[in-house]
Image 1: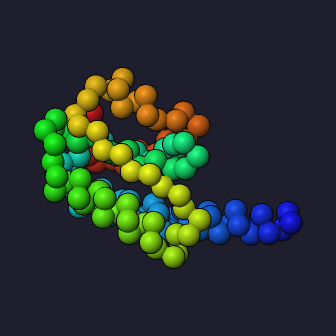
Image 2 (image 1 turned 90 degrees about the vertical axis):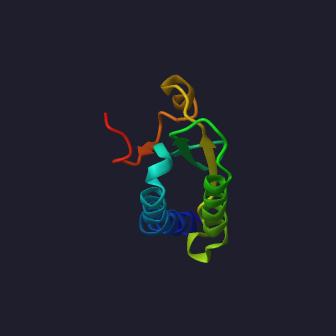
Amino acid sequence: MACKAGQKQVLFGRQFERGLLPKLAVWTDQNQEKLERAYLTLGDGRLLFLVVRKNVPFDSEFEDRLSDLDLQIAQDEELGLIHLSVLALPKVSRTCYESFLDTRMTLEYGGLHGD
């Protein structure tokens, strides 16, 4: 039983490092003109990909692209152990978006802002 759990943990690590992280990096790069910040953090029992847009008004095209990413990850058999939610916030204060970040694990995608 412990061996099986260990194998699952190794497989999850591979899916996370070789599948999920590169996929999110590519998506972030392709959408950087609309992004202020992007984070991968822990959510409610799953990973959370949190993006903060540069603008406040609703952007249906951007939301469609984020939904497509969410669907691609959910349907990717090579990411079968990855449970991910996505959330887009409009331009908000640092205090607001930081309330969604888990201090135990948060990765920020760089190159999106000038600070």
